[in-house]
Image 1 (spheres, rainbow, N blue to C red):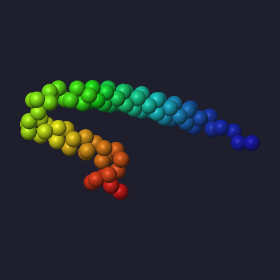
Image 2 (image 1 turned 90 degrees about the horizontal axis):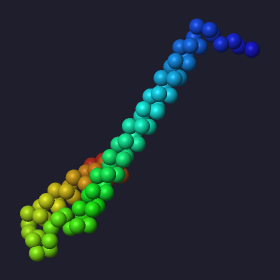
Image 3 (image 1 turned 120 degrees about the horizontal axis):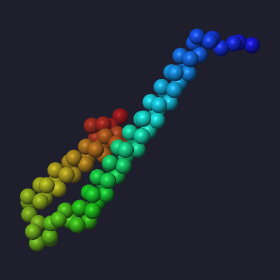
Image 4 (image 1 turned 90 degrees about the vertical axis):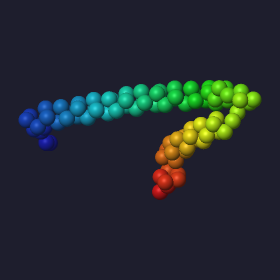
Length: 89
């Protein structure tokens, strides 16, 4: 039977604890960022449901340009998230 090295064991335990804390911190950061994204998506959905605050009688090319800009930014995000466009593998 192999005995644990009394000198190395505390170092290994300290390292394992550091790894555990690091993983926990990463999980907390992930959950926080996901909540942040979910909030932004909900706000965007509400704005879209309200036709981006634009009444049909007020639609002009400036609003089309604004929506094109929003769509371009969102496409960059979805391309990155789904490995499409310039992010295709």
